[in-house]
Length: 329
Image (cartoon, rainbow, N blue to C red; front, side, top):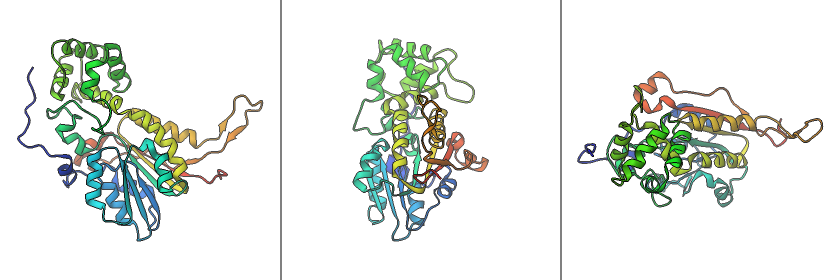
C-alpha cells in the first residue's frame, strides 16, 4: 500500500504552539463575550495553544486570576513554560469533564466570572503527524488527546467489529457510507495491520462513493473515530453541566464548537437551562426549577476575513450565556 510522503521535519506540538500562524478562532468575539473584569476569576477549560489564555491575562489586573486545564500533557508543559511564572495563572492536567473536582481543589464553586470552552482538536495537534489526528501527513494512527491514557485509534480499529465501526462512523462522523467503509476496514485489517493515518485514509478513499467535492473522503471517518476514542461528546455534556455550578451570578459561559454534533449539544443545553423545568407528574404541570442561564444573543460565526486567513475557522460556532441569580430573576 502506498504511503503519503512525509517532509524531513514536521513541527512538534511545542514548535507549532510557538508559531504565530496559529491564532484562536473568534478570539475577539470570545474576549468580548467573556466581559473580562480586571479583578475577575476566569477559567480557560481548553488551554490548547494558549492564545485565549494570553489575551485574558493581558486584560487582568494584579488581583485577577486565570485557571486553565487541558488533557494533553504537551499543552500543559507548554503552558507551564509560557505562563508558569505568572502568579495570576494556574493550570491542571485534566479533562474539562473533571471540572467538579477542580472546582473543589481551586475553590471555584460559584466564583468564576467567565468560563471558556474552545472545543475539538487544536491546530498544533492537527499539524503534528505524530499525534495521528490528520491524514495530511503520514503518522501513527493514535488520535488520543492524552496519549498517555486510553486506547489508540489503531488499537480500537484492530479489535472493533464491523457493526461497531459502522456505528461510530455514522453516529459521530455523520458518514453516509459508514457500513461500506467499515467493511473495507475489516477486510483490509485481515491482510495488514492498520497502524498509520495514510493507511486508513487510503482505505476510505478506495470506497466507491466516499467523500464529496468539498471534503477529503476520509474527513468524516477521522472525525468519527477521534470523537469516539476521546469520548468527546460525553465529556462535553458533563463539562457543561458542571460549569454552571462554577459560575458566579452574572458570569459568562462561552463555548466555541466546530461541528454540528457539538453545537447541537451546546444549543440544547443552553436552551434547557434558560427555561423553567416542568414536572409532568404534577397536576398543573407547575415549574419545579428556575432558569439558571440567560442566553445572550444569537450564535456567532467567523467573518469572511477570518475564514480567508484561517480556513479551519469556517465551521466554528460560538454561543454565550450568563449565569442568573439563584432566584432566576
